[in-house]
Length: 473
Ligand SMILES: [Zn+2]
Image 1 (cartoon, rainbow, N blue to C red):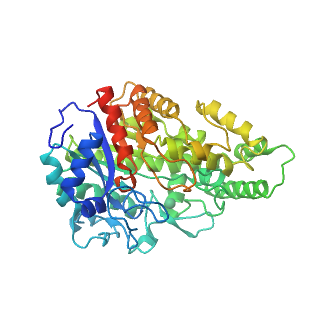
Image 2 (cartoon, helix red, strand yellow; image 1 turned 120 degrees about the vertical axis):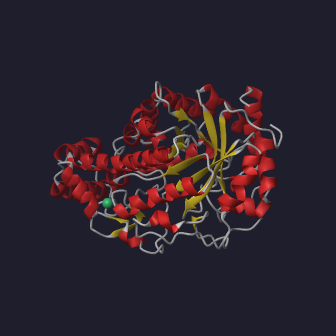
Image 3 (cartoon, helix red, strand yellow; image 1 turned 90 degrees about the horizontal axis):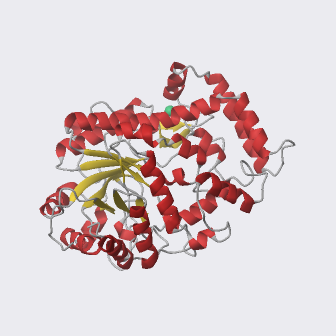
């Protein structure tokens, strides 16, 4: 699509995630020209609220710069709200002071929206559940771990956090002429964090899992969960994890003794269900609020990569359920990063859940239950996952959303950098194949991820080439 052309009303969403710094570094009009010409982008997912440098900021330190943008790391990155917080929307929360100081008084929505609209390019705010520890009052909304210590993460059952999120979304939709919102949280509950990880090969510290704060305890009691038994259960599971990781094979085996703990303490799974329900209730509350104000506004969620690795998390991510409060789901299907993440996921459990088997056999078990055909354990980080993975995951999610109004927009990996620099890199032919695989799987749109500031132009062009060849655009 040439720059300046208007997409038709029925056009599929071709979205891209982008941070404010790219517009400031390269110029708004120039960036829009590139996105439209090379990748047929018709929707921006503009990182508007986050304290993470994953979706905002330039290339993350230690990785080489792409062939555009300022060739320097963003060492002053801070994060926050890159638009302007309007105080009337934050009356019901102690979290008020969140303006991102990174770019002075610049309001990135005011800067980008008029220029994008003139071209018929839609703007969605993209907000992420990543916080700093020095945000004023954040300690009052942080989660509490199994031993009552504050965590870096914030609690979905804390009213000040809940009200902050609703205020933030209301602020975006009332103060700006946006087309939609996306929000995402890349986290597990206490059970998931104790037994597995997609980010940490050694697994997490099982005493630091969350959340056990007063609000979660009160909610558990209301649900009929025995709180004392839940604490006892998680501490028993903690001992199991420590003992397994210490190299002691349980007499009855790893898998059997895991289930013994879960049968003895069903409160563990009840607590995990409550944690995931709390995330979904947050989706629901945001959805209802936004629709009550602007029914035409598109509301959806970034569903993090764990749905592709963890059978437990996939079970908790019931798309039929989510469809009640989702216009669209950006299902993460990052093929290249997926290789090292799959390897990390398996490694994190090699002495716990999968301790009974050689790792290659465990991986084959994993592929069977998750329905993949992918590479071996040693190769994975150096090959990534294949276009066939993207096809299978897209197809599964589309089938899961059948007979609902929820659209599936896979999140496509274009040069996502948060992995060891020695591991596999995205290449134009594979990116092109992956894009086609998503549409073959029934994708109703896509979100080029994870941010423009780390993408090479040749790989971005490969997405556009696939779309042009398939006549999606
Ligand atoms: Zn809590």
